Amino acid sequence: MSFDVLWRYAPSLISGFGVTILCWSAGSALGLVLGAAIALGRRAPLSPLQWLLRAYVELIRGTPFLMQLFLLYAAGPSIGLRLSATAAGVIGLGMYSSAYFAEIFRAGFAAVPKGQIDAAVSIGMTPLDILWRVTLPGALVAVVPPIVNTLIVLSKETVVLSIITVPELMYQMQTMAAETFTAFDAIFAMAVFYWLLVEVVSRLGRRLERSVTAFIRHSAGPA
Amino acid sequence: MPLQAFFNSFGYFAQAAGVTVAVSLAGIAIGFVIGVAVCIARVSGGRWLGGLGAVYVSVFRGVPLLVQLLFIYYFLAELGLDVPALVAAVGGLALASAAYQAEILRGALNAVPRGQGEAAIAIGFSPLDTWRRILLPQALRISVPPLINEFILLLKASSLVSVVGIAELTRVSMNVASSIYRPLEAYVGGGLFYLVINLGLAALGNLAERRLAAGSGP
Image (cartoon, each protein chain N blue to C red):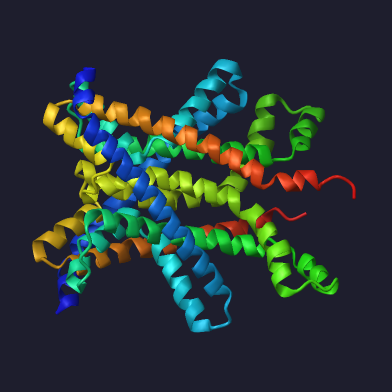
């Protein structure tokens, strides 16, 4: 591919990359918030709510992301839900990831040994202190690695948004390919680009993991 | 009558669900063969083969599946090969899945206690026998639940091959949606098929996990 094609299309490719980053970050943020809410809701003792949330998680995890996007974007208008492609993409990504985040949070809370909480109660810590100093740090350690993994998976899933015409990078690249007859070169460039992106994000993620879990190594020595 | 529309195209959906399962099965089976090769390369391939295996895993796990599928599709066209879209679809799923399966198998091999292999050598097993009778049976047992999980993931990922024109569940849902002007029923119907298949697979996975756990008692 001659580089002047890329140069000519640089503005639309850069804006596409911006939309990719926007969808990824907004979708993940929505997913994290929804997921935390679902995980907390599933700890509440109301059984119909628990049943409903469990059904939601199973539904989302049991169907393909592309199908959910079609349902939101193409079938939404028949129940009065009219969204722009980008809005549908962000909401779709958020709902999709919320089910996975919810399971991660649930497992995280469950990973804190009950003895630690009993011990905190017995030495007279207040419930808020227990949550802040015992439950949350313990859960955080269990939760960060799978969250980082899910974020990496989501960065790849943003490509699927191009199918419902969200103007992200893949969509812009395909437009360029169609207009300049450079399908193979364009898709090759995309493959290299996403590979590098995912490698960089994974490296950064591992670093974050290490820094969040550092206090375990610091306090692991004999007391 | 909303449900009428769904039942009218039920046969169409069922056939498409068959295509989805068939494409995914072919993908996971071919992917398993490639995955075993990549796993062996990584575990005992020395520096060059091992490095090659690591690059394979990194590339096929790092590049989004949709990009991989389109890449294979255009790559074959670039070579001037006129193969059916089905080949590109199954090939793409298999190559991507192989990277994940290789890692599952590698993890399972690492989970077999080191002493098992050493004990086998100590009582005079040949290296081949050690693999065939001691390491592989245990590694495969450990890897069955994650492999079933990978199959569920691949089955969902197979919705992307609709892009290269395979008439599987997602594509057929799109077709039904646009032919009866009832997108809600069409996509809910297609989604239900995925849900039923995946819940069935998940139940199978749980069963396998329990049976295998029962067999590996102390």
